[in-house]
Amino acid sequence: MDQTTATAAIEVRQLFKHYGDFQAVAGLDFTVSTGRCTAFLGPNGAGKTSTIKTLYGKALADQRPETSIRVLGYDMPRQQLAVKSLTGVVPQDNSLDEELDIEANLFLYARFYGMKRKAAMARIDELLDFMELTEKRHNRVKELSGGMQRRLVIARALLNNPRLLILDEPTTGLDPQVRQLIWNKLRALMRDGVTILLTTHYMDEAWQIADDIIIMDKGRIVLQGSPRDLMAKHIEGFVLEVSEPDDLKADSPGAKTIGRYEAEGKMRRDGSAERALFYSDDETSLESLAQHLSPGSFMLRRTNLEDLFLKTTGRALND
Image 1 (cartoon, helix red, strand yellow):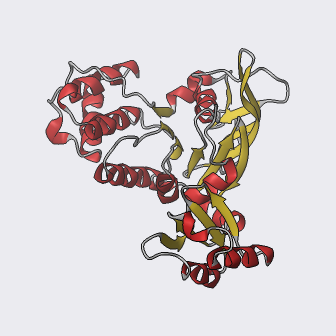
Image 2 (cartoon, rainbow, N blue to C red):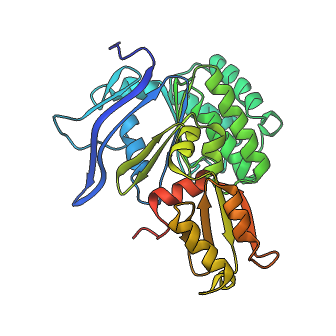
């Protein structure tokens, strides 16, 4: 096998992807370390899924001399069969056979990998236990809840003991208990050395399980690094959310306080006419502003990854 750097599971240089005249991905450079989780964040249409698909051969990157994609030591797309044999993929859609039971769905997929029946059944037993589905193994897919179906799709992606697991929106629409269970299973896989890539719209999901995040917008990377480092470098520490901005109308004491703090560089305003947001590293300044607001019309809290995401990509919807 071709060798890559000791700690890099994925190395991408100058990745471009066009669909006709539309440029979905515009010259990405990134590295993913072995045994870590990297989350791709971005608005719809940012290029996250297109990027992920080029890593396992579902989509082909533009052919350019400067482009290099290496996955698990192999060159993509030239050695994509080797990459696919070592990769598990959880797509956005479950794509399960609803008339078959859980066991039959998994066994059918195991045959695609050429697994013998004895080995396949042993692996299925192991995965059903891992994903807490053993008691449902003879239930047909259409009898399962959405959370159970999602856990089944993840189990299916793990049949070949992949070194790389790619998940596209793995917990969309699931209740908090199922999301927490899936997060715990992903953490267990990383402890065993599995490298994980995921796209998600849930900022708390990225915060909980990602070692690194890549924020994309309009086909480009706008921020990348560990969530905590990015929060420390690129967003204020506190935010005051005001649900009744009328309290801050012109010439009011609150408006004068805002003007003074903005002039001193202590405060940054964001939000909309319906909901104003005031960001600052000085919690005392925000507390002072809150004294001019009606009880129950505001909330003072620490900033989170969603605040950073909106600051980076903007609040307007993409076309």
